[in-house]
Amino acid sequence: MSRPAAGTTQKRLFSQRDYLAPLPIPTGEQPADVLNTIWRKNGVFLDIGSYSIGSGVGVLWPLVMMFLALAYFLNDEDIFWLGVCITGIPLFILIQSLFRPVPLPLRFNRQRREVCVPREDGEYWIVPWESVTAAAVQHSTVSQGGRLEMGLLIIGFDNPAPDAQEDNQHFSLGFNCGGGTTAMALWECIRSYMEVGPQAVPRCNFEGESSGRSLLGWLLFLLAEIARALLKGDVLTALKESAFLFLLGSPLAFYLQEKKLIPPPDLPYPEISEWSKPLPPEQWAKRSPELEAAIAEREVELAAKSAPASYRGNDE
Image (tube, rainbow, N blue to C red):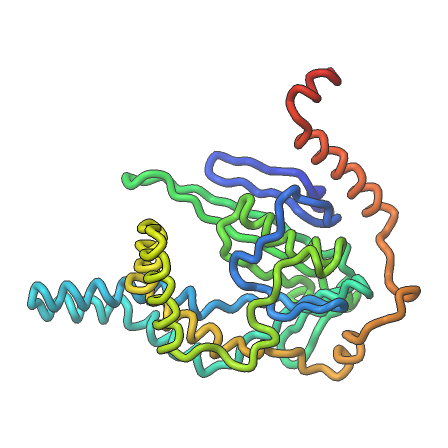
């Protein structure tokens, strides 16, 4: 099946799709782990996960607080039960997810240039890195409230088994990061790790920690950040931290996120433990000639775009 080449863009009236791989050429964006997807990083492999209990808390907390406040100040019991009807099912799903195991991460092995993709029932795929697909998808809607944009990064994998059943031939994972340049920056975390090295990627926020802060610890930490900003006269930062603290329930969100991801889950396959061990440099897999040429061409394009206007004018 033919796929659009990396670097191409498909635009429609209310949507845009930027194709990032294959082949994984530079996007021109700086790597940014906007969703804390990096769970483990070393010189051999990078673990990328999609699990954000904190985001769920951040979405539900304002709704719960709003209905509780309205019911209390208006002394209206009907508002309370309306809030229960609206937030009850999402809250139940959120609480239920706290008792489930964290989904296993994808593992990108830069020395072998392969990806381990965990699947159901203890199965996993070993997929060549240069066959991975990626696209930044962005959609827009227009209403009376104005224009609303949303998007995500989609990373896809093909089952390398030639006899795989039709419903087990493809797998994709979406990251709700907003699409556009934000999705490209998130993809750059993976691409830069594989093509440049671990030093080009932001640090992992979960690995290496013995335990996270307590709920009280996160509350005191955010209060200290607010006090520090006020002492510096930075009222804007203090207001922002206050919004995170009181409106988005950040102490609870941070606490639950760390509770589930410190330490991050490891892949439970003995064969993958062996696959994840370091190789001698002479045994490292190399880029394909096609990728080498594509990266070189893309770097020339990016250099031309970043050149000063006066310099480009002289060339012309």
